[in-house]
Length: 354
Image (cartoon, rainbow, N blue to C red):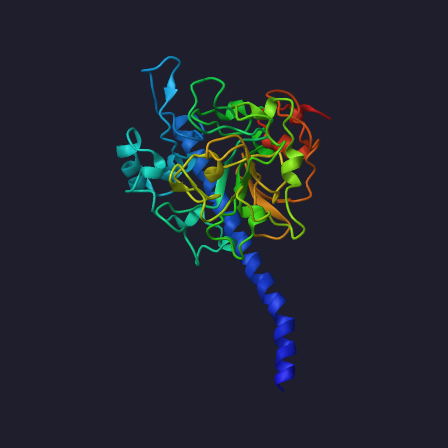
């Protein structure tokens, strides 16, 4: 009798797990859809998409110096997600307090920013900053989100979101239905089970970034394939000093993938469409605003949920075409990173091509 029960459990358990994941995946898709609605509500009121990071800056230096308050795009969505009180609270301190130091608001948990498959119920975020599993798109470009004295060039993205700048829907010349708005990003804080290949960020991988400049990915020597291949035989990052783990710190603040929904820093609330979904992530140095390869990642099987500019949500497979794995980034024309790069770029003219 016991043996029969054991066999029945063995048969039923995969079906139960599959049903649970299907439910979680649907909830995750709904979260992304709500984020898309909030973005469009922002456009209706402001005629612009939210900026990818805040644009607070000073004019006391020449050229203009950004102050690095670095609030994420999700902060600017809050009034359109029934979180106006929280947004107003953040606004009172935004001009003087960096996002990661905003002790009043950084620990607020917003369930709509969590994918159930990533383990929210078990861990909404350790430490003072609470995590979020969604990130806005920098397109087929390895953006810089840190402070930079070059106002025009130091903050660039070919996606729908720009660091410290807002664009209009008219700037998405490839068409909103063809262009990514946001996607999932697994957190090393809550991923169930822990999966370093999708939740970690490794820095200083030899040969990936030729330098630490804002336009690293436009320079000869940029090689995304070396990041894609950076894993051991088990499919995980080697346990080395270069792995951004639970104990690593940057600027005295624990820095983990997707660990701060309030922070517009590169690893926290951005993705790009150079490496395919669920690939490794690499950052050029241990600065959490440095150029990075940060593909969408998830705990779903074989892919990630991606929200598009028309409000739709699609499941993108890990196997999507990503073009030339040794290419460098471009600022105009067709993406060199295949179909994946094309749907990330807002201005690649792909929609006009046969």
